[in-house]
Image (tube, rainbow, N blue to C red; front, side, top):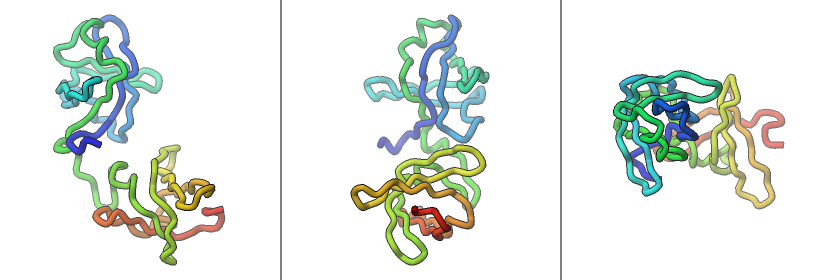
Amino acid sequence: MNRDYLKVGKIVNTHGVRGEVRVMAVTDFEERFDAGSRLFIENNNSEHIEVEVSSNRKHKQFDLLTLKGYESLEEVEGFKDCLLKVAFEDLYELDEGEFYYFEIIGCEVYLTTGEYLGKVKEILAPGANDVWVVKRTEPGDKDVLIPYIDDVVKEIDIEEQRIVIEEMEGLLS
């Protein structure tokens, strides 16, 4: 993974003839696509093209963005299927106890008893709280779904890439 940029969306299509792009967001920060925001389009050659958002509006589950200097369908057609990224230097400061997904994914998960459970492989955001998907270490073991709630997640150490959880009834079965 390129550590200079973090994926915040994917341009899945164009929209209309005035240069709008349809974006599937993969960020919790809706303001990431506000007018004036600096983003980078990663093209098929892994080059990063800096763009500025001119406008954003919601349409169904998508963000429809116009980009400064790109005012026609022809100018944005080449961006279809490209990733939208943000520079690490542009990441927001988080409050204590808040983490970016990329900081959690890859962390090793242990029970409070010290037993190793596995590694966080992805994060789901179904509603009230995030759910961490932990890949078990033993072949044939099913992934474990860990709700990110205080009753379960007891300790997060980003530096050590270590998470400690309290087993709740039915959590591992």
